[in-house]
Image (cartoon, rainbow, N blue to C red; front, side, top):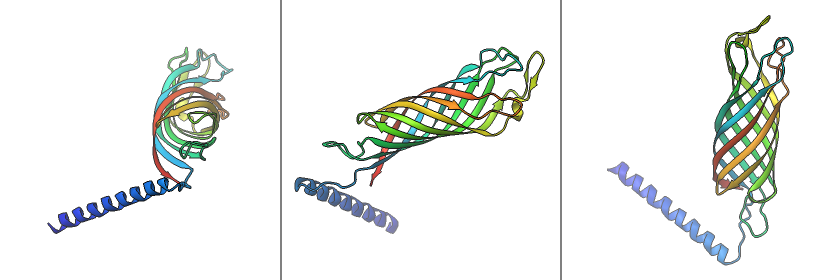
Length: 219
């Protein structure tokens, strides 16, 4: 009973403080005070699909070298500044960080298709043309986590896909539209790193994703 009483008392105090803060803020607004916190931090989730492409492999003809995959994970956004007459977090500059798991599939004409799983971390500078529409540009850091098949067999060459290691840095650019927390973006990432010394192919991808961001705090 004592614990229940203490919990109830704490909850009542929290509600009272919250109500007082709200009343003070409304009173300040009525008196013409302006909230100096103009930047907004948001976090949320994102998911979508990708169309992956792999560069040509000269020793053998892999065939199509393209395929459809998926991706999903967490997103964090910092929107700086405030447009005149608008709320905080509506300025022209922003930064978005994501942590994603991405499955890239490349179809081939050989014994199997290539499936590569990556942990991807896009770090994107955002320029907002309007409050909702922005251009994104920055690097994506990709770390190879899984690969299939173990062996890719060609007419005169065998490639040990299961032995591929390492990661990649990709140049990423795109466009994003966000309204009331919901966003959709279209991007293209160009890979610079080769999959392996004996498999000098590079992976690039076009992606389309949707997500939702919740405002966490202002500063």
